[in-house]
Structure formats: structure tokens, C-alpha cells
Length: 285
Image (cartoon, rainbow, N blue to C red):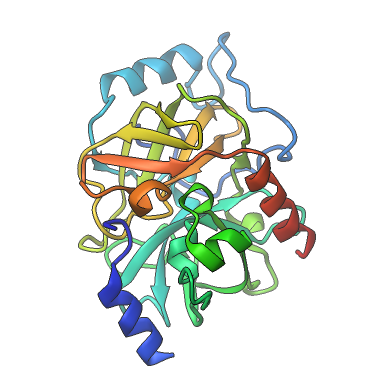
């Protein structure tokens, strides 16, 4: 496994207990999870982006990893820390649309140790984290939902986790940042943007490329530099320049818990079982 901080981070925790296309600022909330994301191919939106300009930007940087700009879309992605942002971050998570407006998505191996079934505790989600700054607050994780087959045997085809986060200052995380929709049964050839936090860096990286079928239950993408800490990084497609939202169709994880090399990453395929997990997690929101 190379995507989370690895076995050493597990021991430490248990022993202790395409850059975005909008301008910076508070994002607008997206549509509900059941509404498909669409891109207008007509006149540009108010901020100057339309479908063709977005495609051109993606194609220009396809397969190239760079620092992610602090945009509304990227602000929904955050680093996961043990205890608080003064420590080390070891995984990545992102806000996903839910009725409770309090749900984040990551890889199961970030939150639950397989076979023992032990859930990590005292974790926080820090969206938009950069160089020690926490521009959108620190959000403690609460309830964690993973598939029983991950908990009992580490089923790599369901290396997906949802977690609720506690409200801060009377607001839920989605009210502050907006959210991307969850997409299931998306197919295998998708142009996606993957944004995450290497544990060796204090800024997020991002890369866009086209996914391919690794197997009927796994997706693959080739983007360089996705080392430890990028587990749970969302794979976002159907970027809508008007609402500045997208659809999450994967997270780094799955096969080899995300991959054994920095240049190729994997995700469990988001099918009906992932949809059922989402419904279970959001039903308790």
C-alpha cells in the first residue's frame, strides 16, 4: 500500500488513541445527488467558463500533476489528520452532497483497519488546508460507514468510506463549502480530476486524465506523483462551470489500496453497493 501514511502511521494513531475553474471564495451549493451534472456548451457562465473552454483547459494539462489552486471546487477537498492540524496528515477526503449536509467521502483503509475491524478515532477533516492554514475550519469526524466485507476481510472492491463530520459554529460542512454529487455506475472511460494531499506536502496536487477499466470492479488512472497521503482523493467528472460542482465517481484506493507506484492509481468501481453505503451513511445524517 502506498496511498495512506502506511503501517507506521497506523501504529502512531492507534498508540495515541485541471486546477479548478471558478474564482476563489465561498462556492454555491450544487444540485441533489440524484440530479446528473451537465455542462452547457453555449454561452459562457458569469465567470467566463463554458464546456468547450473547460475541455480545452483539461486537454492542455492532461496527465500532468501540479499544485491545486485554491478554488471553490478544490476547497471541498481536505487533508485528514489524527487529533488536529498540528500533526501529520495521512489521507484525503472530500465533501459529498447529502440530506444532512455533513458527509465526507474517502477510502475505507483510511478509517477502518481491515480484519480487526478497528475504526480510527479522534480524526479531523481540514478542507482547503495549505501550509498550516485552515481557511475553512477543522471538522471532527463522527460516524464512519464502510461495507462489512471491508471490515472483516479488506475487500479491495469496496475500499470506500463515508463519514459524518460535526457541525462548527452552527453550520454543517456542506453549508460552508458546497458539495459534489456521488455518481454510481458511471462506466469506465471517464475524464476525471483527481485532487489530494501527499503526506510529504502541505499543499494539494491535482491532475486530470481519462480512466480505464482495470477490472469490472476497479478503475485505473495514470497521473504522476500520487504518493502516500493521497488515499481517498476524489475522482471528479462532469465538472459544471456554472454551479462549480462535479460528480465523484471514485477515490484513490481499491486495488493495492490505491496502487504500489506513484504514477498509477486505482479506485473501487462505484456501483450499487457503494450507492447502498451512501444511503446508509446519509440516512443517519
